[in-house]
Length: 155
Image 1 (cartoon, helix red, strand yellow):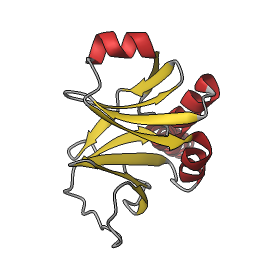
Image 2: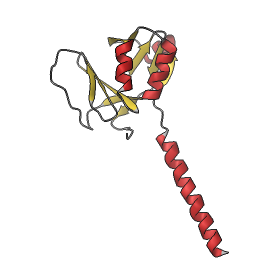
Image 3: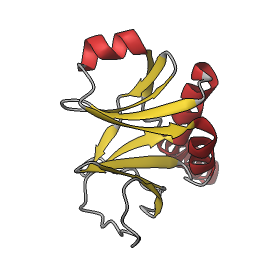
Image 4: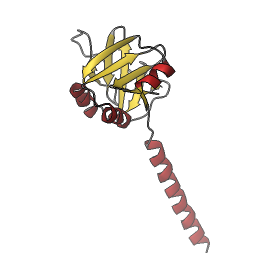
């Protein structure tokens, strides 16, 4: 009888560990608002970079599980899950590398895809507001990104 209880306990613990790993792997970062809601909640846009939707979709397809954004001065960098540069605005010819301590704004690629499905605009705008960074597609805006560090999601 004791062997059965021990086996059942091990099986239960195995499924519990598997379930908790599955749940933690399902972290979703970002929320899609209407543009009017985002303007009201997060304030006016201070600077922005526009990209053709086709180019942005191509960047998204190469990003992995997360897209990471960083404004440096007037330049915008879009990075993949591993912090490799996928896009940069500006005229710098050298590829910039980003360390784990360089702050970026992180969104789940699945939520970025949701934004693109709703927005359907020909132009995507990445915006810097007072305290946040937004991605806007037509009448929809993606917000609630995570600052990394300190809240960095592992790939």
